[in-house]
Amino acid sequence: MDNFYGEQNRSFQDKFGTRKMADLLKEVIFNNEFDEDNKTFIESLSSFFLTTIDHQGRPTVSHKGGDAGYIKIIDKNTLIFPSYNGNGMYLSMGNLNANAQIGLLFISFETPRRVRMQGVATISKDPALLALYKEADMIVSVKLTDLWINCPRYVPKYERVRESRYTPRTDIETPLAGWKQIDGVEAALGDGDLAKKKNGELCSITVDEWMGKVRAGDPTA
Image (cartoon, rainbow, N blue to C red; front, side):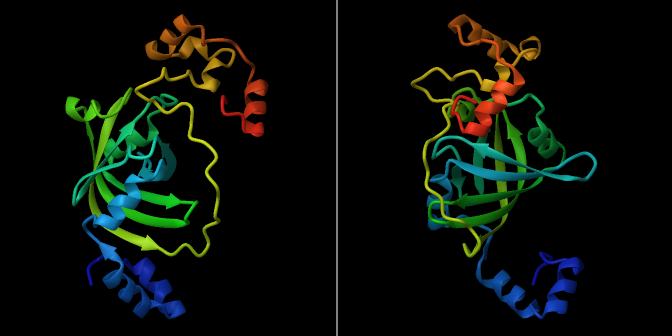
């Protein structure tokens, strides 16, 4: 066995009598390469969850979304995904640029099915990669270290209703995020968002109005 399990894991495995099972699972379900089945599954998804570590050693998790196919596995050990326009905090991107060790959870609530991954991330501004994604700020390239399936036992089954209207697409103008139209936010907008004023998209709403949209599931929120 390698060092995937630490003493903190082993102590609970021994306490609950699961060390043999843990060793078996590590041998049977773990991979350090993408096989065709996992490649097909991951590339079919329109979102995943990303864990990074901040400058204080604290983990944080974020949801990353796009259209199906935006996660691309480019070889047996590497996947890429874009960083799109967001809230300007750059928590995930800043964290992984300083600490390249990341975790990813790929999950389909429609199936349900899930796959977990550990990897080493780098940020790329390669024009050839950026050209694959409309309006991407940068591209994250992840070298796979460990990949394993999780059983779907506790995953609820959902039905997909719609994709996000805010995902950049080549055939339509990307709308301005609803929250960026809140009173007082305009003064902090970047050039790209301010440019949308030319299209008459920038109106003014209150925080309460925007939160009302969020609570109601309004797709323009």
